[in-house]
Image (spheres, each protein chain N blue to C red):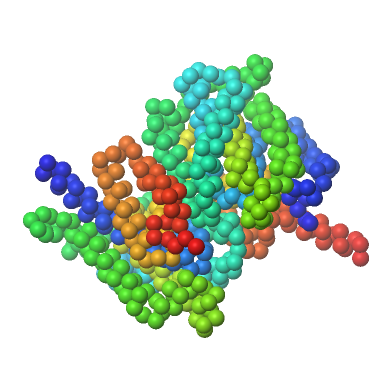
Length: 328
Length: 291
């Protein structure tokens, strides 16, 4: 199998040397590219978001169009705690965001996971739209279309202030991402991860062997929602502003795009996708916003039609071709 | 009391016009999803393109309004036929995720092209004088354009019903929706049937977008902004049927208009909440078949 991180019992869970690469790159970027740390923090946040989406889309096979609801709830929870309740400690906000998003995941998951296919997709879209409506109309709490400003964030652990250059933001996001990555990796290789792969590959058979399919799906949906909530809180804390776009359908779609460009159903696809997408966006989109969407759209069509597995899929194929060349 | 009645009539009237437009746009999507199981999120692109074609045909070519509508229908049908042959047909057997992403890609492309060609502003519609005034009926005045919308849509609905229920092409289509394998094995060319149906459905979306350009503003974000409504019409109504989406479109048109009039602070909340409720109650939609 080309895909090393498909999870399940048959996979070898030992850490490989390649898995240290993203972290080495991230640490090197901190020292070598100090002027891009704010962008770097955003990339780390969206990697966490993509990782949470990958859990349900790639591993559990649930196609959702409304994952931004959880990201947005996390972002608004952190923002509202600071701007309306005066709770400025970042870690408390982070935990609160994870809990509220996770709870929303349990409630909405319990509803949507009763259906499949198109109905499920529609329900995720409808629930996402409801969240957007609520965020828009409850403007006394959320600031509505103007966005939520006036957010102050206390130093992390009482020690590290959020500075203008994004040093603290970057390291803080990197630390949170590392913890979440470790958790997701353990989850994917656990028996629980194996049963998710089973549900994705053959739902009926999992029912037949007596696996609690619905509860497993609900559990992974809630976990994924909580992780997305963490990512949302990080965005609020590093940008100190929450806009309506954090709950929009466009964001849900864009995240799917990033995940697919990186490679779905593999942990590091969630790393490659947002990094490539956001660096390219930073370099190109400001000069040519129209051409940016034209390019991304065309790329997406090409990836779906001709390059399954995204960037990492291409790397896999290149590696296996070189390997074959060596052997012969 | 009389005020209440007046507003009720006006809501029913405007809601019906809106619902009819929604139906003309979405009916093609219902067939695409029912016949080929293809989740075409980019269906709104055809509606938007229809609007732009009509506006350009009127402003740069100087064509009269009815001709411009016809041009929109034909242009979108032809373009969609080409897209179907080149791109869509490759993904008929593919998974949901691939179809979703492919069609999101098409939306991105179309949004970018629309912005390049027309800018981000909403396009004004130049209605001919005979559709601008009021039309009095039963002692009340109705805006002539809404009357025109309802009348044209009703003709389209009748034509669709006739085509699907009373012609041999319709019989083949119904057979293919019911059981594609069986239809194929009795000698129906489902590939060609689907190409023609897809083109007709997309052409109708283009016509619907052009007709409704005054109600649903033609602007580059159109395919994103209205996607949820088109999908709701199809999934609530039940895909692969003509009647289901019709009922759903009218319901949504009237509910949405009523909400905007009486409960503006709720926004589209009620529509989405009802959708969730209906889909939980009947996952295949109100008139969808569960098998």
